[in-house]
Length: 106
Image (cartoon, rainbow, N blue to C red; front, side):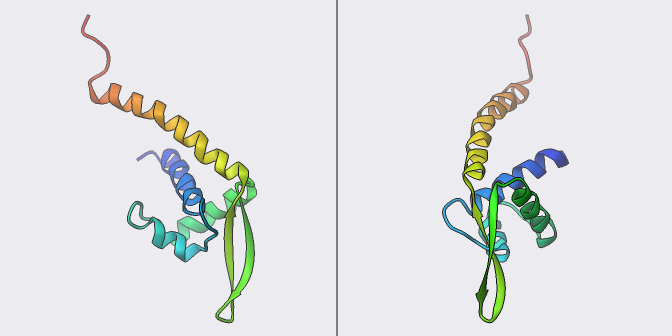
């Protein structure tokens, strides 16, 4: 798969994983595992990019005597998911065109 396409898909997957509730890295990896394999070395740079892009926010909280970073989606992050879903409709149409072999035989 094209690396840029995969990168964009993973970013939206990360946002989707925190759409309904705040979460932390290990939990996100577990939540996504049935759908997509993502490692910590891939996840954390994505989280930093999304934070820099203001698509999510980060807060630290103590858990079992250790600090844990919790990630929350922002309104801009929610809009990114909605934009992706709209773009996906166009991608599905392109996929169908390619799958069926392209144009007509006229």
